[in-house]
Image 1: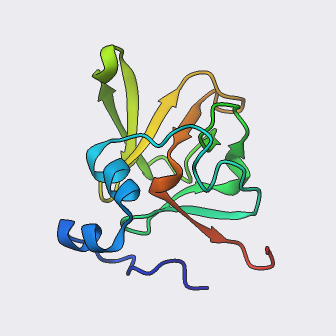
Image 2: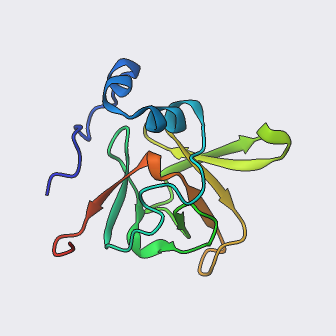
Length: 140
């Protein structure tokens, strides 16, 4: 199944991203914006599959690790692998948080918090605008 409109081997230029992404996707992934809670396409998504970076197509989260945190953003307790996402300290908005980004292309995804379920105890609070769901075969 073709997972994306982009080639997974190519990191796309800013010009290509501006042309291909919606203004919200661009603002979230390239400028670190946050979509409003409960508005993202993947908040209530229940289908099995793999969530990929909307910018470069890299696999980021397995739908099996998604859970309803009640926060209004898709939440996951773990990425697909240790090297899938990177993190850095975010001191914006007068607080200190841990920002997460695609390790491959550095697109902003959201933040990770230490209040998630087991087995990790983490809550990756991710903007729907930064994700593209590759639905598992057999899912509608």
